[in-house]
Amino acid sequence: MRVAIYPPNSLILSDLIERAGHEPVTIMKELSDRVRDAEIDSPPLNITPEDPSKGLKWASAEAPSGVRGRLAVFAPIYEGADAIVALKDGPMNFGCLGCARTNEFLLYLIHSSSIPHLILAYPTTEEEAVCVVQRIQSFLAEVASHD
Amino acid sequence: MIKIAQIACGTEYSGIQEEINKAARLVNAEIVYPDVSIDYIEETTEIMGFNVKSPGLQLMFARARALVEGLVEADAVFLASCFRCAEGSLLKNEVRRYLQKNSSIPVVMYSFTQTTKADELLTRMEALQTIAERKHLLARKKQEGLTMGIDSGSATTKCIIMQDNEVIGTGWHPTQTVALSANKAVDDALKESKVKMTDIEAIGTTGYGRHTLGKQYKAQLVQEELTVNSKGAVWTAGCQEGEATVIDIGGMDNKVITINNGIPDSFTMGGVCAGASGRFLEITANRVGASITELSDLSMNGNHKNVSMASYCIIFGIQDLVTELARGVSKEDIAAAACHSVAEQVYEQQLQEVDIREPIIQVGGTSLIKGLNRAFEEILRIKPVVPKHSQYIGAIGGALLSSAFIGEE
Image (cartoon, helix red, strand yellow):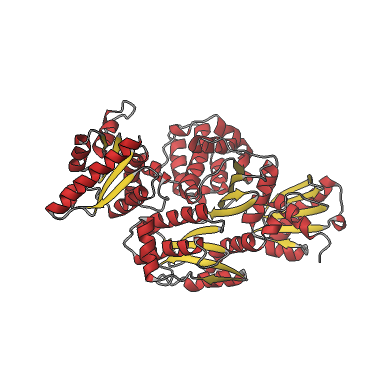
């Protein structure tokens, strides 16, 4: 299964998905695809000049261009996945998009998505961490069994 | 009196609440604020999953939910937040989508500044009032008898005479003095249709000069252009059943209206920048020494990608075009770039506020400029329908709707 994660650049979550035998859909891959795309003249600095306009699919022109540029890269990840695993309220070093507005909106997109999704709070104790890992694994197993 | 639910954040602290109330009073509507409890707001945030930091914005979603769930009643929704609030713009758009998906209440969105005045809101409030209160009138699909519609636009004045659901006379004049320009357009339409003014059974006026002309011609229908134009657009395009989107770029403003079975259910109106209006194309035509009709052909032979434009602004955008002309870029490329600029700005600033539904009907004077049709097709990847008489839709809507008043004083 292609499993999108939130934050989309979390190496811990990415590793967890991979260990469960699935393909993690991460921002690292999305950005590297852009760098390798033969149609893009020079490697972009995260996004291309067209991306903020592409972000208009999710946010109006009134939304800051940085939000729209981020959405152009991050939002499609959650639209093309088979399942989504999200950990909210994590510390900055767990995975960071650099913009609270984009974070709020992406969590809303995940929450209202028809794709099977699991949103959990970032664990703050070892017991909670164990519980989170178990819940993610059983969620993935359940979605995979339906597939 | 209809009830317009205000779902907004920041109006009272921007000093514009009284302007909103004033605009509502002018169209005989009452602004209401859906009442919800703190628990309900918290529950809504949990259910919707959009955990914005501003409680005022959380309240907006809760109020929308209360309307959808029927806990409060309203005939229309005025959805607004402060201009440039990032959270506000993101949430407002989602509230609009939520309302449109889960209810049939007409919605208009607005981003306000501290200088927002009642006059700017008036056409929007009037349209909400018309949609809510005169649905039976907007449901009319056929013109009957012999009627006239006059559209007093900012750039041109148009007159249409219709008989038994057919256009039999047209008149068109640049708007100078509202009354005189209308007289000329009316005379031309009467001449073409070979009928006398005394034979006309009902008249409808719309556009900026509608009130003046309504008095002058003792019109039975005096109505804002959002609802009238959309009616004319679906009639001319033969799209009275099902869904459609109307893009109406006029001389000095633009409107995008979504339609369901011939009745508008959401709309957005430009008015901040003239760069997305016919005026931009008119100035471009002057700069390349062509008429607006010639600009249409020029634009089809040019490529906008050959022109570097850094601004949509009617001053700085035109300045870019002049610089490119001086650099040796062809008139054809300049014409294509001007069309692309107008279409792109409408796409980025207006079309984001509605959910586009096919077919797209392109109307207004600018719909006759082929390069603009092509630019929309390129940007939207949908070929717009440009119906016959597309420049007359306001007058046609006036003639069509006024036929409901035949025999009435």
